[in-house]
Length: 451
Image 1 (cartoon, helix red, strand yellow):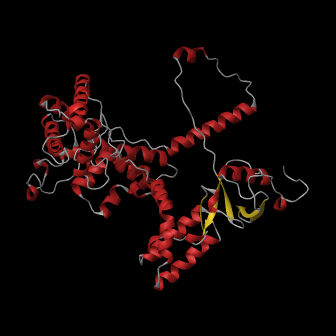
Image 2: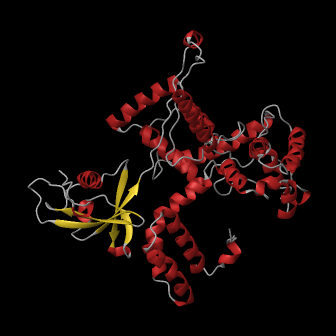
């Protein structure tokens, strides 16, 4: 129990008799609020118990995490996962965890919808206030959710490729073949079934890219032989070489089939010989295909749209971008014209100056992030910050060893981390230190504004 006659700095909580050696901890609750926590029965064995003591002693509301100073990294703060990392007189920090709201939607039958009574005109003010707050939460959630155009791929290549379901007869045949393989090591050799497998795999691969690279093919084949070891190729060291070559050939035939059927697929059509200049009239010369992480390299036009109609949308954009508070209309038109914009970049290769004149909205901060999402299906800012946070301890240790002129500029930035512990300040210090570490100029990369 808490002794209410003493101030918080001298309050303590009794613990089970199994813990001994009293301890004291320095607790940073928030900026300018530092307390002393006395533990008469010693440091608890679990982090959960320590959190409960802190919450009870200092009367903290809401959820929070506990961080501790790590001497191995210059007293930088790390998340406390075990109480073995702290000792008597250690410093810990309380970090509030923002509560999240999860909305779960369930389908409503039409009969229930029709039978529901309308809201009475005598609703209480409290109900109205709750309704407004819910609407605000929904609108905020919709703003944070990026929906890619319908003509675009929605997912990048997965870390672990999942073999799709084959037809029912093929699945039954492979199950029996797997049993024989586990019994006596018999390998499956039916060429017609293997052709059906390649057909299904090529469809699954095309969902992510029309031009898979070698490591993509290897990943697919590895997943295939792990699920169906009976499909290993005889005479191959790994049992996969024959599948790799046949899948490459199948993807090439798949692209040729789309061409013969006159299916609109710009990422394939751009490499047709008739589309190439006279200097590049060779099948493998100046081949245009994704080089890095482009998921939507050259998407087709939205359903019902043509290049001419999208050009009219581009001209409307030039007018809309001049208006104030017009972000929603600009975003909708930029999504709609994404296909023709990518075709212009890949096929024509315009200069930056000409491209800025034709697409001025693309160079707004919000649209830079959205365009990155359209091309890669990955959020730009959150991905960058997550990776920056995960590598921060290693980056700090490397930059603290930097010498010379760059080291003298970096050290004051890192010293400020001991005074201010916000995550935003930490990110700023790390980024500015990286710029100095590589000999770049802050003035060329940051625009400083005086308010």
